[in-house]
Amino acid sequence: MLADALGGRCVGAIEHDRLGQGDAHGDVARIAQFIRLALEEVGSMQAGALGRIVVSEVAGMRFRIAVYSVASVSGASSVEALPQLASASRRARIRGIAQAHRGSVRFGPALAGAAPFVEGWFHGPTV
Image (tube, rainbow, N blue to C red; front, side, top):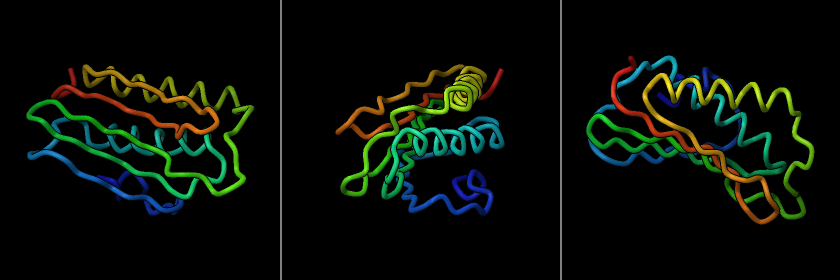
């Protein structure tokens, strides 16, 4: 699914950690869109990040997808002024995808010393 999410785009180093057993039950295209948007959002929150980690965890009908930033390049700091409209639009779409899967999403801070993240929980088939 990670390859589908990236659509052949190179967005830096990406590691994928898959945890749990089974298959996630959901709309594959929308989950791929969730991952792509989360990668963009995390990238916009921290300048100079060395890469990102995508964690997908399956537990029966419930699954979790999280995107974390990897440590930033020395001297690079968090982005202070996010492009407000682009970030708000991305976050609204990310929330909508999670809600369509009876789930939720949490956004981590883009503070100095803290790696930003986007973490979504999904519950079974879409309604």
